[in-house]
Image 1 (spheres, one colour):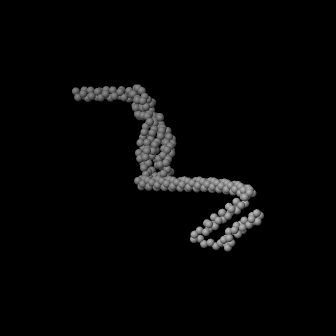
Image 2 (cartoon, rainbow, N blue to C red; image 1 turned 90 degrees about the vertical axis):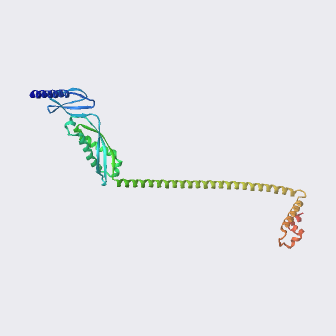
Image 3 (cartoon, rainbow, N blue to C red; image 1 turned 90 degrees about the horizontal axis):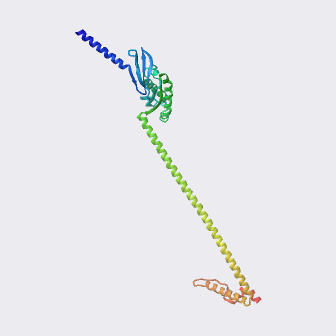
Length: 308
């Protein structure tokens, strides 16, 4: 009875194992996935999306691969720049499996291999750059790493689409020094801007003063021209009036009694002028013959009296 129980358990286990193998011989592959099948230890075929039947005990699903683009996190690593500054850098790698057979048999673990290659390449590239250059040329670093990975990953059946640097972390002391330098540059730019503004303000004020002086001089020039023209017109008018007066006087003298009228007018004018001179508090020194008015008048108009 013990033997029969053992045989019953054995056959039950065998049937379960056979059912499992038959179940494993049925494969449903999802989209963007593939399975590498080995037959008797050798590569047989690659199963893509769809329903597939394997030969039990002969066909074996050796490798599974996804054909989607994969994002692999590259761990932080310490790199030394050309100017001997240690920086920690990490990134993200984007790749896709193009040939599942090469990805299975070309290398043990393509994800690990690509990650290590990225780290070594990054250290080599950063070693040729100064610290400031690493911040300014991220795209250049990414393109150089991508170029190296394309050549190395081709035998692995993998294509690296892009690599992006996530963080560049220099030491704390370097960060503080860079912040001080940046602050100094900002202060310098602010002072330059203020000085340029003050310079422009001074230039504008000087131009304003210059234009004001020019306008004043032009105004003064025009004023003097106008005054000169007015004075000339006034002199011309006075001269014209005087000439007319002289002409009238001359014509009046020629008339009958004109000479006597002129003499009378001169005498009256002379008397008025003498009255002005002889005001109170004024001391005068006069010629002796001034008291003899008639002799004075004869000295003034003596020629006319003789002709008369």
